[in-house]
Length: 114
Image (cartoon, rainbow, N blue to C red):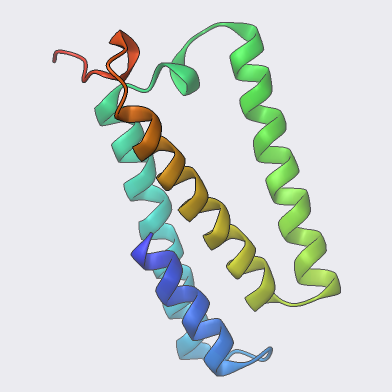
């Protein structure tokens, strides 16, 4: 989440025409952030993204497609900084929701044995 925040701040500060250094920094930080998220998903063995059930896989693909389309439309019609702010807001909302849901005592929220 920190990487996305830094990238959003870089986009806001540098404006719509990114200098080469700012653009390259944003790409590296976003790649690291996505890699860290994927590593956490695999480490935690999240069943929703790796379960072979067709419905869950299909819903995951639809969610990714809707997110990509929304981001592209925001970039084209409003600006990169707005798209990054929207993405950051989604990440913060999902993080807070996951934290609140994980406080329950249900069996699915307990860490899986390695």
